[in-house]
Image 1: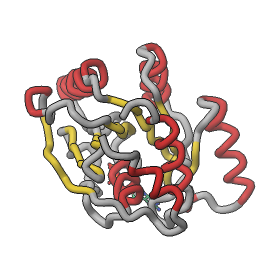
Image 2: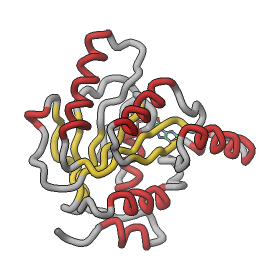
Image 3: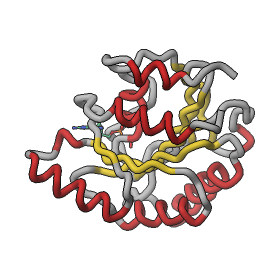
Image 4: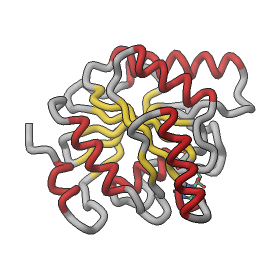
Length: 207
Ligand code: GDP
């Protein structure tokens, strides 16, 4: 397999320029692409900013689907990154208007991916910097821990924190839930480079 694409990206000062393409959307394991490349999966509540974060990491404006309608993405979206990795956008959880049946479907789909996917190298749990840990985020974090899945916690929308003291407060409460929680903004690009570094470190060995 070719060299880690993140290595050269993280070394550059500008936002990483990466060759990325949309692969497919899967509503069940039968649609998942062949297990060839290591995968980085993004998880989080609906509307938390997952797709925007993927776009920011890939230096793209609109590759990953962003939506102002929370809960509308019920498929797993796969993106190929530099022909070396797949980025995987998992459907958001915790949207109030979703029925119990839809919630169960969601669980089934996500778990089928997280449990069975042999090429899953890292799960990025995305939370909202302003809101901090919410019950479903903690539940998912514990689930990942219980299943021994490598993970990275990222709090996004940090541009919405008004000042340094809000930032410190946010970091403190984030780190009560996870030692290594990182802050970023897809809007300003702040923290994106550091997230690349963390992804790179945590996926070493899965290539
Ligand atoms: P997803 O449902 O988790 O994929 O969330 P999206 O990426 O579609 O984002 C949901 C909304 O939050 C959109 O209106 C985005 O423009 C907005 N958003 C996402 N990331 C940021 C961010 O870092 N800062 C700000 N201010 N808004 C953001």
